[in-house]
Length: 119
Image (cartoon, rainbow, N blue to C red; front, side, top):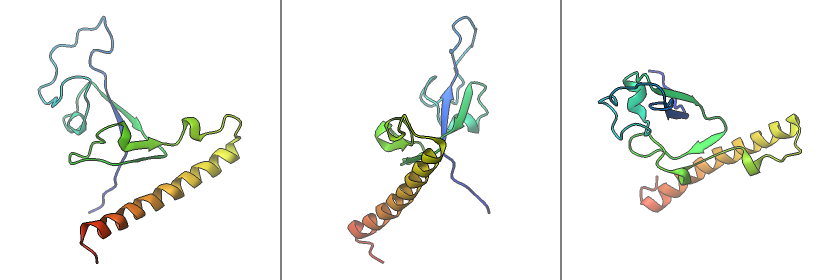
């Protein structure tokens, strides 16, 4: 069986246009409108929208959802110098990728060591 982990930003568009009639919130909404989750895509919700989340690293909780803003970070903002050209940005993204992969492995090793599961 093939599988892949995807990191997406998911949006709820319910009520986004003030002048439009929307009807009832779909019954599968676990947290109500404006609180999207995996169930939106699972139920082909007509109000769900999503986009990719490139150059991000995140921790997902039990339901596969990232619990809060302290649990993810993406390349951009103050990480990208204003005066950087495309070549420099490409180099910085590669540096970010290398650091993220290293930190994932470090987190695993630290967990194994602290958990007492030592292999």
